[in-house]
Image 1 (cartoon, one colour):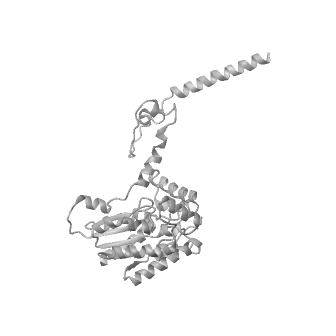
Image 2: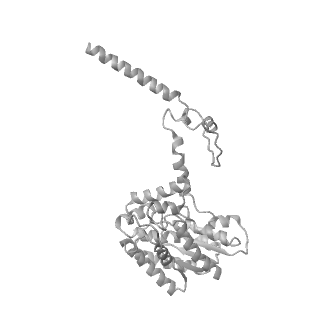
Image 3: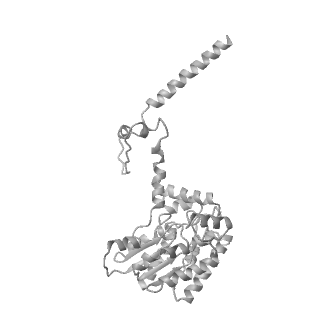
Length: 332
């Protein structure tokens, strides 16, 4: 009798499982056109449509449509900046317009955080701005890609480079990670940064007037070990600006002054672990590009004032860099 009931229960379970699977297979996908129309909603949001068979439906196998937001953000993250030197050269246009090259890393690139170069383009629409900020670049990497920039013969150069050198030389794990991921000849150090910055300035200073920026903070605790480390880089930037008669844009001092006006407490200290850095960066760019949150609001949620992920600038921070660069351009 026990076996009979056991068989009966198993048979009932199999029948239930069959109808459950059948229901899943026969169910229409979520978010169809008819569902949208039935809500009778007027919306200005972009409508994306994926059309196909079961490979698009996604109830038989993995639903690839769910991955589209990730690939959308990844495309933004990996795209080069607009209007690089190579773009300008490819047009082969003779122009009497002033050419300003903004050279650096992700802080200049502007797709991770607010883009201060775009602010300058709006302020000076008759000038040509070359955005030569490449995500993750060190000073050594900038030297390797100088030729197209120099071929453009920029009148002015704004140089903001060294944050990745500082990050990569802060601890050994970060250094090894930078060496591997960026294919550097050696682990970043302050000594090598000084050598590379000298070479870089000598190359670009032959034909252009240079403004060099001090580096923004990393995290927003002025007394942290990482910002003591950044100060060593900024001390050298100030020294070389004086030695080579460059215009110094005091980005660091201006940002620290702005941080003093914060209206909510600092939540987190900078942590150099790779997984935490990636989480902060990608968390921020997902909220900005997918959920349309401002960089300032993302910063507030993280207890930061100018650095949404403790490295990259929000609108408040980019505005400060823009104003310093604007004054340099206006006076040149």
